[in-house]
Structure formats: structure tokens, C-alpha cells
Length: 377
Image 1 (cartoon, rainbow, N blue to C red):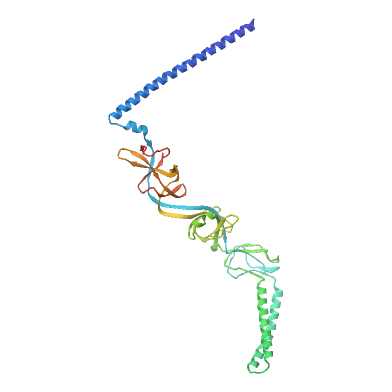
Image 2: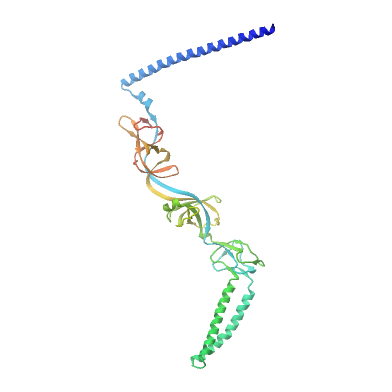
């Protein structure tokens, strides 16, 4: 019996909820119809009032309804430049690591890191006792041979003695002279010398150490002769010239500098399709070989030209267009202008034709404008 009562109660509750939902839905529909009627009535009144106001000669209400608010800037001439952004590495022709020309034992190292050296200065010596002894023996032998030659020559000048004896003495003298010269050149190979004035950067050897040709010994750099070397895509080759301005930033030093392009290679690397560019650097004691530099190489510059924000240029019907503001005597309207653009850089574009100084370029609100549309600014 209890079970039957529960079932009846549940069915009654469901019926009540269903009825409530139905009543609520009907109420919403009725309210919607009322609002629609009010909307239609209001729209009719608005149209009637607008017509009455316009008939009275006041078109402000209509204009406000169809005009678009924009921002404009006067078109002027200004400087424009285009630059190539890349990275380079500091290097230099006067940045050399010296090594020994002959194997042997180092007897003395005459410099240390940080020392300034002159061209031709001896940096280190390799044991050369045997070469020196051989050179001294040749010199002693030469002294005797030279005396004999002078005597033979004196006699021959007086037409005394045979020509053969004179020529033999002369030949012996000249042979020893060549041997001495060769010995001196051989002795010079036992000295590591600086080819240019600079600063000792690294000393990798010490006295008593054995060394062989090809083993790094001493590195010298000339801070006044450093340069930056960079590689650029071949597409830029026709745009660059020696003398182009370069803005340099050294991230490791947080320093900047200005220089110019000093050399442009005309050879294209067949593997990377790049060419090399060199930039001579102003003297800076903080610079070191292999340091990275960020470069902005100016490849185009026009000191007086029309420049617009790049995003104001739109592409309509396969044409580049901008919108300018003009006054037709009754109101201000947007006028579409077909332009021809040049290079773009740093969110700016050079305009070659289409705009003139004094035009009022629409810089905000140009989206969705149509030619002749009323505007406010």
C-alpha cells in the first residue's frame, strides 16, 4: 500500500513540474513578442524623428550615424634607410699564433702575456749551439780564403800568376759566402720573431720544453688592426658597397660603435650561397679575436623621402593603396590612393609615388574604409 502511495505522489510531482515549465516557456514567448513590438515602435519613431530633423536642415544626426572616426598624420619628407641585420666575428690579419720552424728545445722565452712587442722582436729561442758552431767555423775558414783571394787578385791585377789560380780563389771565396749566408738563414729559424707590432695574447711554451713545427707557441694580436668578418646571402651582393655605414653592437661588452664596410668579396660560396664582408674596426682595447658582434649594415639611404607606417598600406584589387582624408566642401571623406612602395624597414615603408607632401594620411581606422566614406578626426 505504501509503495502505491509513493508512485502516485511521484507522478503528481512530475505533472506539476511539467506544467510549471510549460507556463514559464509561454511567459517568455509572450514577453519576447511584447519587446519586439516595442522595438518596432521605437525604430519607427527614430526614423520619423531623423527625417523631421533632416528636413529642418540639420544633418548632424544622420552624419553621426554614418561617419567613421579616424586618426590622420600630415605627409612629410624625412630620412629613410634600410639595413641588413646579421652577426659577425672579430678577426684580423694581425692576429697570429707563432710556432717553431724547426724541432728542438726552447732555451729562453723573452715575453709574457700582455707585453707589447715591436716588429722583428725575438719572442723565444730554440737551442742552436750546433748551428752557431758551424757558422763560426765557416767564418774562420772564410777569413783564410778571403786573404788568399785578395793576394791572388793583387797578383793578377799585376799580371802575375795564372788566371786559373785567381779564378779558383775567387770561386772558393764566393762559395763560402753563400754557405755563410745559408747558415745565417738556418740560424734565424731557431728564433721565434714578431712580424708586426702588437700585444702578446697567449704564451703556450716555457724554457726547457721540446717543440716541433706546427705546435702553437705564442699568439700576438694588434688591437688597432682588428676587423669584423661576416657572411651574407648572395641576394644582398648588388645592394652593398664599400663605405656603407655599419652600426655595431658587442653583446659581451654592452658597447656600440659605428664603422664602414671596408671590403666586399665578389666570390660566392657554392655550398652556402653567401659572400664575405669585412669591416675595419676603430681601436678598442676591450676587443678580442673571435668575439661576436651584432651588425646593422645600411644598404640603402634616402635623406628626403615620403615614409608611411607599413600597416597603413593595404592590398585591394592587386594594388597597393592607402587612404587619405580630404575635404569636399561639405564634409571630410576618405579617399583611396594607389601608391608604389619601395623598401620597408623597422615598420616603415618608403613611398615612391602616389602621395605628396601635405596629404593627410589616415593612420588609425583605415580598416574597412571605402572610397568616399564620411569620416571624422
